[in-house]
Image (cartoon, rainbow, N blue to C red):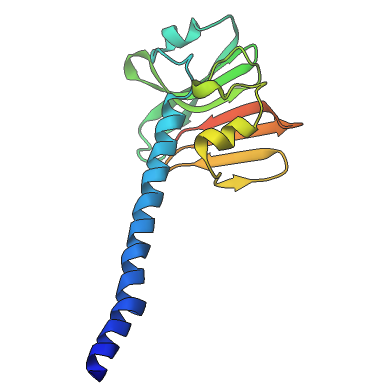
Length: 170
């Protein structure tokens, strides 16, 4: 009888909490991948992937490019492009065949729509309703990071004033 009590106690205090801990870690991972998925699809205006398609999403105010040595292969030179529109800046890696991989997108005007209506000018309370608990929240910044990407919502008087998307590039 005493051995049964010890075994049951062991199972209850040692084994069962470890099962729940594993399940919690699994759920957190799923949450991070959902955040990455949201970040990837959120900028509705980014339908095209070629540089020429992205140039045509609005009136282009300024464009510039810079060349940098590839951090993995010193014999390669990478090209990075910045496109500036009214209330929008897109910075990305120019892949061969005119494909732009975004690294950073900054939105400061409501005309640049984000999925689920989390646009500049909308109440920041909507962010928490849609995305849940943030990775980090400060006085004026609500941050969500997935496994690879992050989005930062800046607020002024409980209204979204700026949005930054940061995409991982290796």
